[in-house]
Length: 318
Image 1 (tube, rainbow, N blue to C red):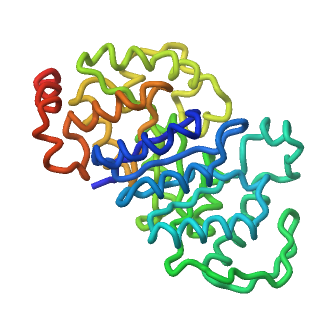
Image 2: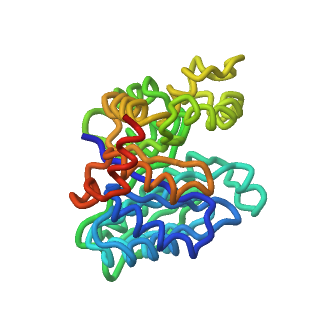
């Protein structure tokens, strides 16, 4: 059965602790934070979430390789892994090209940069002494004084065939962004093989009224259909002239409890190991409660299911 995670995106740093605690108490298996330009730093959020929780796995989705020194990134990852007793999942991507240009850090080759950072960070986390002279990474006999006892999972945040192929060559997992239909997840599983870890971010909105829950996400999906950088994920859906609710349903975990359960099952059957919900910005607290009360969370504590609020919500969604 796939893990079910929850994603915090574009919330101020002080919101991370209460959201992390709520996600863990509600029964989510994973919590993911972002490191997008101008928002909160990724590792600060990871550290706060790990400190505030005891069970849930915390992932960074993702650290942009082009703005991170490989050695110092390995130091951050190692510290998070050691402090959390193995609850940290490290994610690296090359970064959004426009943002990299804005901060003067766009490398000559995004994929070369990602390969070099991923290779050297993994080698350092494994406790190796690393010397490396590449196009982007230059290390001279460096190693971690305190490498993690257990190397944390390391996944590449990638979208298209070049990134998926790089993950296959390096033997790493992948983090697929929102806009990945089950068919694309299945294709990535075929390429990576049965053991690679596949984490899928997905837009979500649980609502007792099925059509209303889907309708709220229609503008998000409609806009995504025409983004060129999502073309590989969307496949034949890219530039679709219409955005009917059945298409919204294919690209989200949304609607009533039955629709959400079916969407989760489709992604899991397609090969996703972790399905990470991305709610509408500002609705995170409400959505955590909604998924908990609907009984969709595998890590849910027994008392939650019998809480009066949970019973009322269950009656609403039947």
